[in-house]
Amino acid sequence: MTPDSAEPDAPEPAAVDEPTRVPLALEDWATVIIMALLAGITFANVLVRYFTDASFAWTEEVSVFLMILLVLVGTAAAVARDRHIRIEFLLERGSAARRRRLQQLGAAVLLLLFGLIAGLSLRVVWDDYRFGETSPGIGVPQWWYSIWLPFVSLAIALRALGLLIRRSRRGPDGA
Image 1 (cartoon, one colour):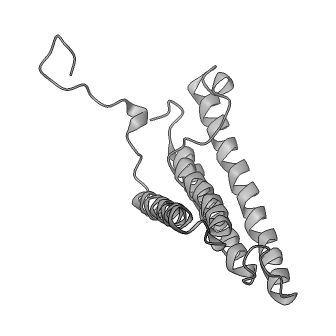
Image 2 (image 1 turned 135 degrees about the vertical axis):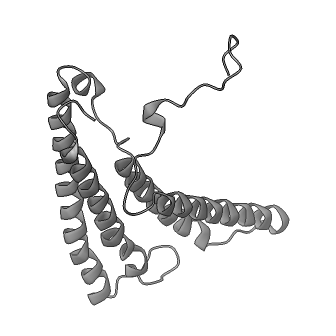
């Protein structure tokens, strides 16, 4: 609320999520679950180390995997919300048509990049499975960790496609 009025301030236009076909709550809940898992296993490891002077061997490896997964899920959310990294100096200069073209270009590049990552990471998963690679810490099959990369990369690519479609439907004035 502002000091001069009894009405609450309206949210900034950029703070409101655009409607999407796939609800953004999907990434939000995945983030909550991953963060809860990270906090839980880290806390359990701290308790075990405090009371027994030993630690769970698997927690570091699983924590690294969960942090990578968290970054990828966060990337999907950032792309869907059009909050991905970019050079604002270039985006905010010029006409509305130029901003729209730059937004389309950014979404298209994201689509291409994560589409390539999804496709190429399938080969990594197949190689991990075919050659029987195991994780360095606890010796589980490496493909248990790498199988998520193609799926999450595809999700990011699809979010970029949705962003590209939404930016292409906008008029030249950005509305």
